[in-house]
Length: 124
Image 1 (tube, rainbow, N blue to C red):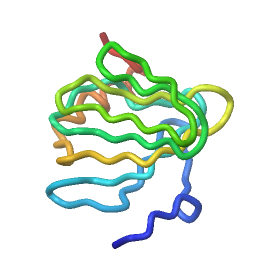
Image 2 (cartoon, helix red, strand yellow):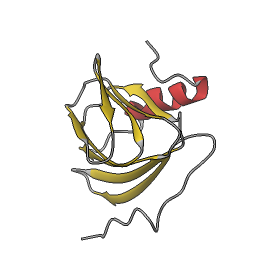
Image 3 (cartoon, one colour):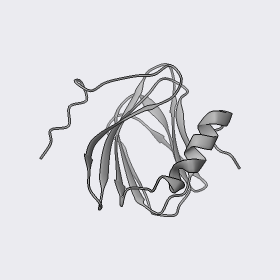
Image 4 (tube, helix red, strand yellow):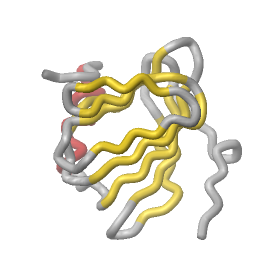
């Protein structure tokens, strides 16, 4: 079983969030995700369940029409096919452990790429 080390793999990018895969199988994907203040994963609705466990910083996890304010120690679970997104707020980095089951397809992540290109958290 791989050890999840947030310190050793920490990496930020000035332009967009950074996601580091810790584990992946055909059933699940585990990532360490790092956000600068204001960065986000755009709202999209893949066919996978999502668990977001916040390790550091503050932000918002969108679940359909609900925005959950999150801080260290919080976890949010979003069912498959439900619109979701993650956004860092405040003036500190946001770090989260993210689990998707099953892993989303490349096609399901196209709305994420489009939202990042347009700079839109919620494209609707």
